[in-house]
Every structure is written in C-alpha cells, then in structure tokens.
Length: 125
Image (tube, rainbow, N blue to C red):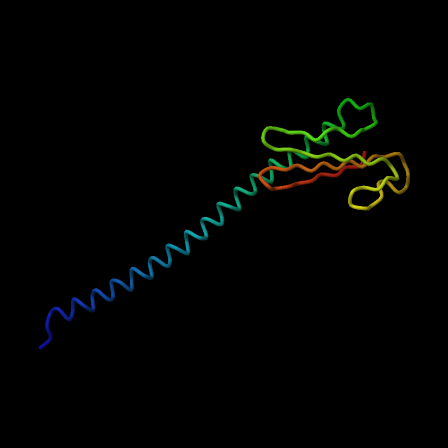
C-alpha cells in the first residue's frame, strides 16, 4: 500500500513545474512590454526632434527679405537644432549641388536633436 506522503511529493513537483512555466511566461511578457515602452518613448522623442528641426527652418525664413542666411544653432526647450544654408550652385554638406540649374534657389537643411534622436528637414527656397 502506498503512503500518502508519496502523493505529496508528486503534487509538490507538479506545483513547482507549473510555477516555473508561469514565471517564464511572465518574464517573456514583461520583456515585450519593456521593449514597447522604449519604442513609444523614442517615437515621442522623434516628434520633438522633428519640430526642433522645423523651428530651425522657420528661423531662417522669417524676416529675411527673400535672402536666407545662416543663423546660429538654436535651442528650443530641451531640444536643439542646427541649420545649414547653401546658395544656388553651392555644394551641400552631403556633397551634392544645391539647385544645379542655377535658378537662384537656396537649400536649407535643419537637423533637430532631442534625447539622442535626430530628425532633419531640407527645403529648397
């Protein structure tokens, strides 16, 4: 005849195995949630960096009487932007020519940065 303590050992083993499986599932789900939180945070940083770059473009275009000039790099809140203005026929920082047709346009590139996320806007004016 079997002793009742033998059944207790089997129950303990099954309980431990079920807990290990549940712990593995919980750890996997927490890893997924952590990664999703990071992605959402970076998306928010990307929006702030984009609007900082947009601010750089607007700073160049406002009150310039149709002739954009270089403006100093700027800060918007805790974000920053860098602006490069290249005249028609000039070589841009990426080694391409601005307005090769020579129609008198300017190439304006503004790069916004926030929390190590960079977004750039380039226009021809």
